[in-house]
Image (cartoon, rainbow, N blue to C red; front, side, top):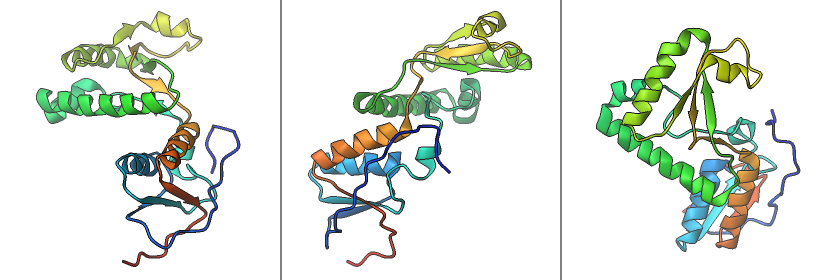
Length: 195
């Protein structure tokens, strides 16, 4: 399965080194991010990806939605974690989003649209977002319909959300990792690790 992001991919096919300090298995967003931060910290890191290209798994099939917090409504997050822990969770999420924005192209803002019977839920979500320090605004059914989305309910616009091309982001992070000293190899199925 391939994702919705059509473009050529860079292959990393150089010979494997005999040793490394840290081996990262998987060339998706998480693996490449770890390799980048380790390389920037001066660690001898090798990232291997079984596929013939980076982002060949779940990351490459992602729609690229970037959301601060969770996909769940904020009032449910507060109910599950309590206000203080929910604020901590949003703060961590906000830092992760900021790190990606610093290193890869990301659009600004996201619209979380409900169905017609979710009007009350969307209103609660806007109020709960304020409690979490996460700016959002309520869009009416008419506002949403004006976008060509008739038949849907109200929405919550979150300026800190965004959309990004996960494959392009992974390739940008991999380039930065290599520039920082990481070694990246594709087409390498990890069979085992010898010390």
